Length: 160
Length: 110
Image 1 (cartoon, rainbow over the protein chains, first blue to last red):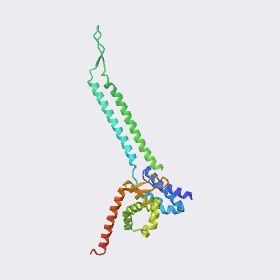
Image 2 (image 1 turned 60 degrees about the vertical axis):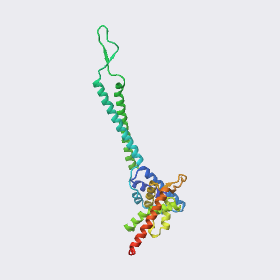
Image 3 (image 1 turned 90 degrees about the horizontal axis):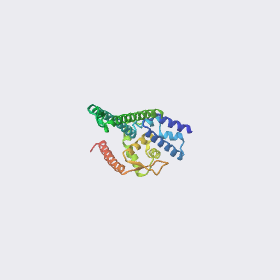
Image 4 (image 1 turned 180 degrees about the horizontal axis):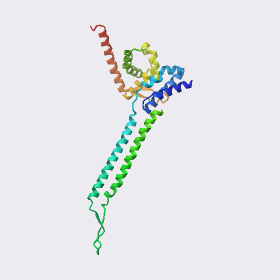
């Protein structure tokens, strides 16, 4: 007898086209219906007859995406784009500073030869390439996270 | 086999019926609603299926017309909200007006 319910659930699960959260909710409600029917003294066959054909039941729930997952995915994508834009901007600023840098004298000129050692622009400009690289890597990481979400979501739809 | 016309009529009125069940406290969960429809629905609602009831319940929950009671963990129970009561009131008024108008038209419109 247990196999009837199991088979019914498997059929509904397979036929449902909605997102994971909705699928879980539907299956939970169906499970509650089976419990309530059992308390009413109904057999699994009678309960299945009341609930209706698995295919028809699944088809009555239109495929719609998980809104929260979509929002999360969009936020990760936006953060990746922002990081990438910031990295490019910092890289361009760095290039500009380097092009226009006149150099900074380090210490005083040699008394005998008059040679003055000149260093590169110090401080903020020196940290720019590192920051840009960090942001670029961060953007790549977020991009990979988003891709993983998409792959998992697709896989989940096939597996369940 | 139901005609397309009857199916359309049932689809259009099921929200109002289910909302009434929940508002009355006649039945508050999916299985009980299915049973009540079968028991009291006469020939028109014979053999109602979960596929027609559960999507309506979910839709009404999304609209904020009904909520589930967190106190009932074992069996999810629905309760009507103020928004749901307002929607039901409007639906009933529209339904009364509509059926009266249709009856009037069918009887010759005199």
